[in-house]
Image (tube, rainbow, N blue to C red; front, side):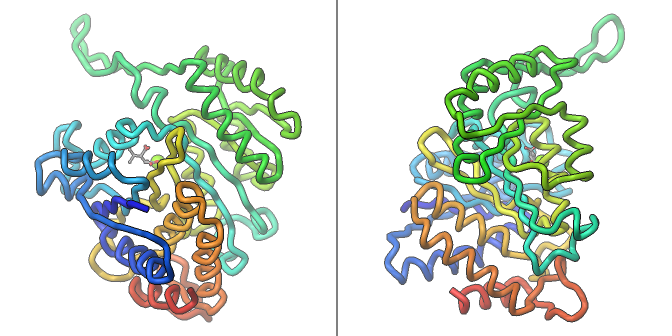
Length: 353
Ligand code: IPM
Ligand code: MG
């Protein structure tokens, strides 16, 4: 079980440290885990002048799975676009063909008050967003800003091939088979031809999964329905850009983005696992960040890449146990609970494990 560990920037190194302790504990219990570190994002730029340098490429390509903290920070905002931390993240996704991004939005009962929505709207929420991650307007050519007819002209290109749509569609249908057997495909077919193709291909795929109910929704309505009645959704599948936006929206339904893991998989279940939150430069280095999303990302890794369902559940149950004990980092703190720092939270998860 070769894991490339990429701490990244901001709170990345602190939260990764706690996930590594959990993986170390599982190794002591017999899992053949090997971890090696390399920089990504701003940390890589500082060291090698590039956000996804060769050392990191080599390690990531050879690994079975990648555990990532987070990338980005204000000190890099003025760099040329190709050198920015975010480019490192986009480059590793593309390089490793990690086309299937799974972003669960789960509301833990203990954290029901963290949501800004009414408890009855979100209680028991369990949505899985399946976002296509290596295509769409994110990577489409041509793109750029140039001068045309005496003024600046900006352009990007949205495109999908039917095979790209089909393979992400399959991921969504298969995920639904293991859940509540409902897939909602999100597009903008009333305006964009590419997404009419998206809807057509999803519809053609549906007969292969007769047990799954497929519905379609326009992205603007989907954004509205997510805050109006989020529990209507089981699996949502959509393209790269709509998925970027809807997954942030869905994560906030739970009120605790510090709790949400994610997986980005290739066709052979090699995967990159990272918390859904960012690098939080404002609290970096203070020892107060919530390590649970990263620890839960390690659990997703055990499940999806290594097929270690039992170990995955052991980690998830340990996280549930510390929540039940009333331990909270600042982001999920409420009166009556015990506020702890990053390392203390890690200690508690290890003890529960
Ligand atoms: C995400 C992030 C990235 C994206 C950025 C950092 C490039 O927002 O993982 O959702 O847009 O995909
Ligand atoms: Mg995003």
